[in-house]
Image 1 (cartoon, helix red, strand yellow):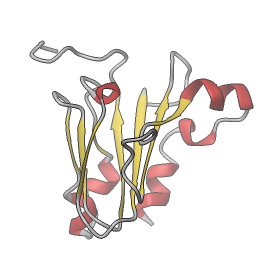
Image 2 (cartoon, rainbow, N blue to C red; image 1 turned 90 degrees about the vertical axis):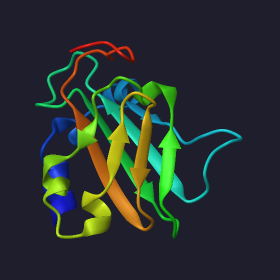
Image 3 (cartoon, helix red, strand yellow; image 1 turned 90 degrees about the horizontal axis):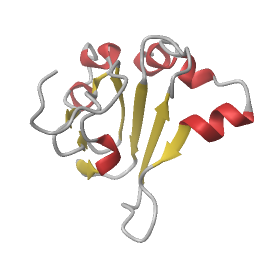
Image 4 (cartoon, rainbow, N blue to C red; image 1 turned 180 degrees about the vertical axis):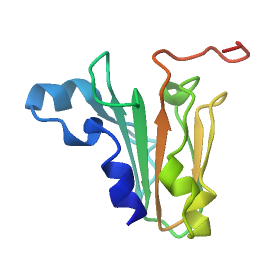
Amino acid sequence: RVLFRSRGSSSLFHMATLAEIQNNLHFLNTGPNQVPGLIVMKLDANGGNYGPYTHIVVVFNATLNTVNFQNSQLQGLGLTLHPQQTLSADSATSSSSANNGTGTLTVAGLTTAVFVSTQTAPVAAGAFK
């Protein structure tokens, strides 16, 4: 139920056209170093009016182990666990975390975590907001 409430919190999850999807949706766990069993989906508003969040990152961890996924595209975005998920009774979900300095997301095994940001531009490491 928490995941459905998270999905309903932003129009980024409901893009209407192919062009919107191609401009705003990116998969980060790709290439020769990809982690098997992990999908990392990044949605960006790119100046569009999609609701309160400018960035949403969804991590689907189908492995049995906690994963620390690092990607430079996540650095400085100000990502936090979605407010609905911070209230989750499932400790595996509510313990998911983001390190914005390193661009690392930590998600327990067999867990889907949604991270959100209201920042319009990345903040450089060590910079003040």
